[in-house]
Length: 549
Image 1 (cartoon, one colour):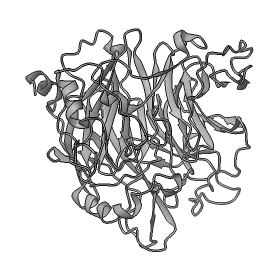
Image 2 (spheres, helix red, strand yellow):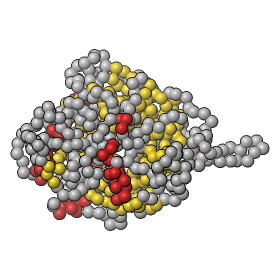
Image 3 (cartoon, one colour):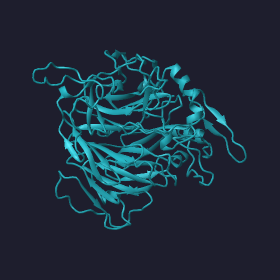
Image 4 (cartoon, one colour):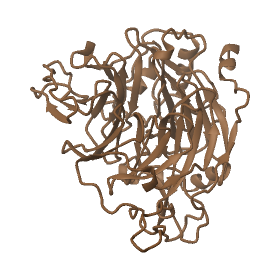
């Protein structure tokens, strides 16, 4: 490895390589970044985003992709070593960044030395990192990079260069049936769908066998800001843009027919417009708000879509009915990120008010707010793999673990038990004394907000406050995102520097004991729960103090 690469990834002075939680110590295992030799002439214009993808075992009927030209570069040779002849026999799954995750089979241990597994029959040998093919996909400047999560090599194994615009957002879907499982949105508004496996098999630095949508801004020349597959759909995906529009695509349509939409009459009004032709792609346009849409996230069943934007509102839609279910405003400024719990009960948001907000989809309002960041909150995620201590038994008190990262360079972990948080003081009834409400977490408001309404931000005095369990300065630079995997927490900075924080050893052993039972399915109903059920005797409650590391 070059000295340049080592210098880029070296731990900055004052940053610890571990942080402590009640269940044990998380330790920095690997760091990854784009090669130091890349010239970032437009580096500051694009924020690096992160996608984690587990490739499934390749179907035998899928044809191989023959590399176009030989290459001896470090990135290309690493890809060749990893994939061999491109037969890719792996038993894998997918993890997204929205709290809805699918498990994978194979060893639960990250790292270790490079091994080779040889299949039977005509299968050719492929490099195998502990039985997994787990990839980190991230953008930096005008390049999309792909790294092997389980490799100790800090440099990517693949880079894809875009000559006319910068990649801004991306999403992966392991359930894709025709091989196109990776979406890429560009600053120019162009969108591509490709096969991740085909990109890894080809030694070049250009996209291979890509489907191109909104080519040259034929439908919208507004910057792509976020992109997402629709869960449980047949190749449907949505793209959010800086002009406040969401476009809905079907990846199997080529989009050569007229895909223009009429002008928007009222920029402040939510409107849905369908394409004039059945052959058009995109098939529909949703105008959400004035200003940029900053983040999109689907519930795990694909029934509901949440969106946050420059105007500071969270909006939650019934996706199939194309109707607004509810929405609410931040305390200050724009909302930058949102995510669902995998049980669909809660949504997290973060933004320019430096707060993390917890929204109840049942009560259609914010039910808790978390204070701990010293700058904008840029990423939030539920931990689908965490389980609370003393969680065995028949208790019905549900606890959630989630994380947040911000431009203050901090990673914060939070524990949320809705039955244990303290609701603020109620107003004094005439002739009475103030009391703390208890029991149901919805008791601090007298009624649920009506369906289809956008609500102003409530007074902070009326919403329970939660404090972080852990506050850890994870990077030297502002952070842009985080993802939880079975073995680790993965964080990324705005500049494209990635760190993998391994879970405590006893946490790994607890997970591995049941991994075989749950790792064989990738269906939504078998996803690991975001929340953990505790017994009423558990002493692990909402922390009164923060662990600083």
